[in-house]
Length: 134
Image (cartoon, rainbow, N blue to C red; front, side, top):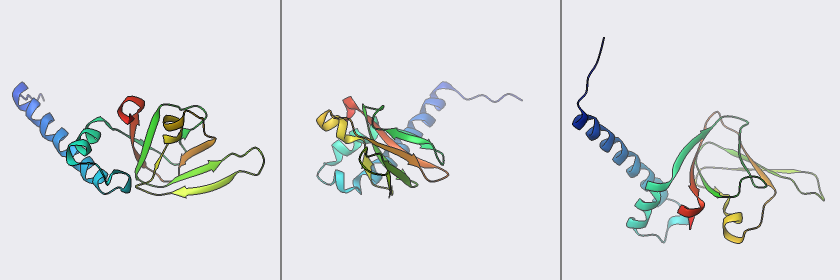
């Protein structure tokens, strides 16, 4: 069986899907405290440049000593933060949707010492690279 779709129709479907995804991302971003001061134009621009990625339970999302050029916003799921302090025992903290992380290195150029791991079967994050973040 062979199915056929014309190029014009295919482009229309892609446009509609991209438009719906951008709208959903914009609405999510609008609800974040971090984005409260941005006008709709900037929110839409951020929604266009974020990439979306899912992580499974136990997967490392961010190791601040290795990953240096990305900013993360947790969309769904739960993330465990492992604080690896040399002077004390490692501590653990959980974060929930709407929390952002990874900005320290982008803001002040200093490496952090935390590791972020997914605690959910599927944790979805929005990722901004250095250029988009700036």
